Each structure stands twice: as structure tokens, then as C-alpha cells.
Length: 313
Image (tube, rainbow, N blue to C red; front, side):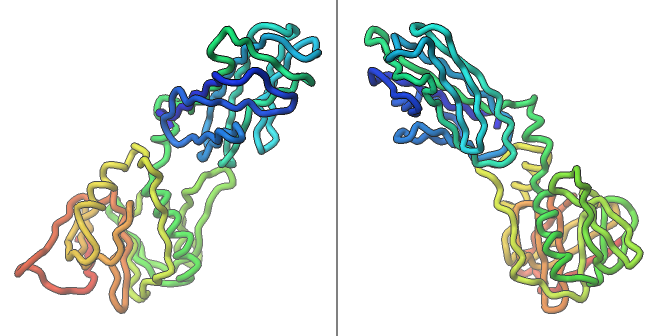
């Protein structure tokens, strides 16, 4: 969201009625995915985040009110006021929108209890600007899409395969085998949980998991995957996700290594950003792509048709 800005300008019209939205007729600048409706005057923010909105209006006179009042009003009930005791001159305001329930639409509204009149001597009657706050890249880089993807799939796995046997490979030396139990997510956490294995469960941080191998479970085609935002956020795992996604394709036979002791091979069944799936008639394997250290495609005469193979060396 570092490159998200929308600037609107009102150049036409001689007045605006009380309790009416300002209609801006010129888009000065538009970068990112903010949208503007020139019929209603509403701006829509499609993504959660921190935004700053500022505006100014140049007033010639009013139809009777002693001053002027303009409000920024959202469809979520937020109201930000700007006012002046004068009937003539500029009125401006600023608002900070901390949005966690997008989409949100807002409009600039005349709330002066009077009609506002604009001067015919100036070209620009009003201006509104909105931009996303970039906290040194933290808003984008604090989230890793592969982790969100893996968490999304695990939510489905624990429901579809309760109690199923799974071997958990990590970027550490140990390999753990046990039955799927559940997920744990702190009430204060975001989208990334811990995976619990065993009847007396042990919790594992999923950012350390490289491979989940299900030796006796058949892949369920109802499993869904997240679609990356467009544009793809440049965060901690973006380049590796893109590299592997585009380097291999569904149907490729590959061998790969993860961590210091794990190697595997198989024919790719699902190739999603952040996850590769290998599946045959008796087993399945999920691989978190940023954890892959090396990958080799087997083609032509050298290719050997095989089922999933995984080993801890």
C-alpha cells in the first residue's frame, strides 16, 4: 500500500445544496486500487490499512448560515468534521482512517444547514486527497503470503483429515510422526496458527514446517487456495514463491531438498503460490515452497514415473 493515492478536484458547478455530497469532476492522480464514483461522489477503499484523507473547499458565500461545515462521512458510521465561523474563504480538514473491515466507502458532505456557493473567479472549488500510510514497508513486509496460504490449507486439512497420520518435516533435524489433532491460534494472533499433533498434542510453529507427508490419505479435491493480491505484495517470501511457481508446472516430475536432511520427489499435482502438492492413489504431500532449498526437473528419457518418495537423510 506504499503506492496508493487518489487526488480529486472539483472545477465545475456554482453551488452545493445542504446535506449533499461533493461531486469531483477531475481525477488529478490515481495510483493503486482506490475507486471513485463520479455520480455519487463516493470513494471506496477495498483493503484494510491506515489511510490519511485531507480536503479543502473554497467558499464564496452561503444561503444564510453564519458559517460553514463540511464532514467526511463513511458508510461504517465514521464522521470527521471541519468547520469555519466564516461564510467566505477556505475550509479544510484531515482524517486518519484505520480500516479493519474493508471495503469502506466515504464521501465529503455539506453539513452547513445552508447552500454553499462557489466563486466563479477561481478554477478549483474543492480538492480531496487520500493516501495509504506506509510504515517503512512494515505494512507489506510483516505478512508472508506463503504462511497465509499454508494456514488457509491447514484449516481445511484438520477438518478433512481428523486423526490422520502425518509426518512433519522441518528445517530442523527432527522428523515428527503423529495423528492430526487441531490448530491453535491466540485470540491476539492474526491468520497464522500452530499445528497440533498427537493425542497428547505437541504444538508446532508452522513457519518451521517444510513438508507434511500423509502416507495413508488421498488428496481431497475440495481443498481451496488463496489467490495472491494484485499487485503481489513484495514481502519476505515473494520472490521465492514466484520463482518456484513459474519454474515448475503441474505434471512435472521433480526431486527437491528442504532443510539439512530432507529430500523428496514426485509428480506435481497442484502448483499454487506458496504450496506444491504431490498426490497419488494412496498418499499426498504438501510442500511450503519458500522452504525449498534445491529443485530439479526430470524430463525426457531420464524421467522415471514414480509415486511420492520422501526420505530423511
